Amino acid sequence: MILAAGRGQRMRPLTDVTPKPLLQVRGKALMQWPMEALARGGFHRLVVNTAWLGEQISDYFGHNPASNGHESLSNLSSLDLRYSHEGRDFGRALETAGGIVRALPLLDEVFWVLAGDVYAPDFAFTQAAVDRFAASGKLAHLWLVPNPPHNPRGDFGLSADGQALNQADEQYTFSTIALYRRALFEAPWCPIPAGNPHGVVAPLAPLLRAAMDAGQVSAELYTGPWTDVGTPERLAELNAT
Image 1: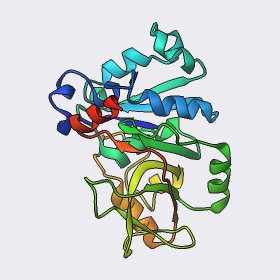
Image 2 (image 1 turned 180 degrees about the vertical axis):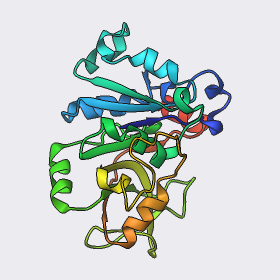
Image 3 (image 1 turned 90 degrees about the vertical axis):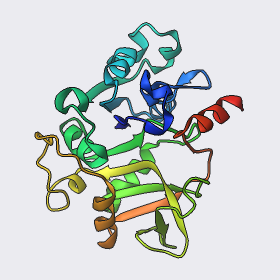
Image 4 (image 1 turned 180 degrees about the horizontal axis):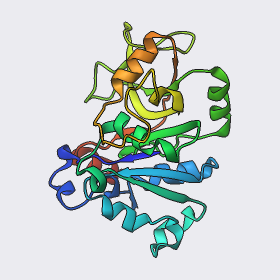
């Protein structure tokens, strides 16, 4: 699942007319980078949630991007896209947990989630990672990154044996890239009914922190190129290098 529903307030005025995941980074739509990486890893069925200017995203990529009339999308011929239109259905974005629960009927028992506004061109999505996570019995596995200047205190700690921690002397930033098990978004961990029929807005962090306290979240450190493209300055810096 690629998260693409946010308003992108910090990217205004660019996002007044274009949803942030469609902003151009090095000649491609920002969210095309993770789409290509997922396809290289053999993951071909993608769910995209939308809200702000969401029709632009579904119009641009369609259900099979390579057949949607954009030459730059020709290397996405293997992808099958489905959309969860939160803006159309509820008039607002549902935040991360609310959006995942809404899309849960379209997702497998174990699934990837990542933000469509994060640039990590070298990240490898592998079946081996999915298999290890599925065998672990954990509810989530997170990829953490060294703290960027805009998040110097980090989000979560990482134990020597690969457990994600709520509190630690050294904390890292959550990359947004993760593997999840459906059970994290069902009772008793999540109170929202399956499919989120009422459009409940819910953040992800409380679910993750509760699962961490129960020892149900593993993590690892990713040190490859990674940028949260959250401001026009960060976008310009990427496009200048």
